[in-house]
Image (cartoon, rainbow, N blue to C red):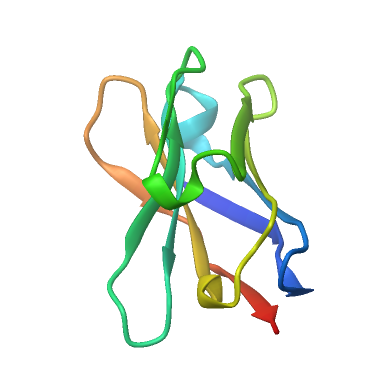
Length: 120
C-alpha cells in the first residue's frame, strides 16, 4: 500500500507565504528508497501543472513561475517533502497535490490534494 498525507495550505493574502508538506507511508514506501517527490497544482478550470520536483539526492526542478519564490525540500528519513511558497499571487489559488515515486520505478503516487487560497 502507498499513502501520501498532505498538511498545510489554507488561506493567505496575496504577497504572503504558505507551506505544504507531504509524508509518505505504507509498505511500498517503507520497504523501498524514495525516488522523486514533488508538487503539482490544479487551479479551477485549468489543467494540472508541475510546480516543483526534487530527486532522491536533492536535485531540484522548478516551473518558471516558481523560481525564486518557492522552495522544495525533502527529508528522506521522514519520507517527507515540503514546499515553501513565498510572495503568493491570487492566480495561484489551486489544489496542490503531492506526488512521490519509489526509486527506479515510473509509477507515481498522489496525495489527496490540499487547497491553497490566495486572497486579494
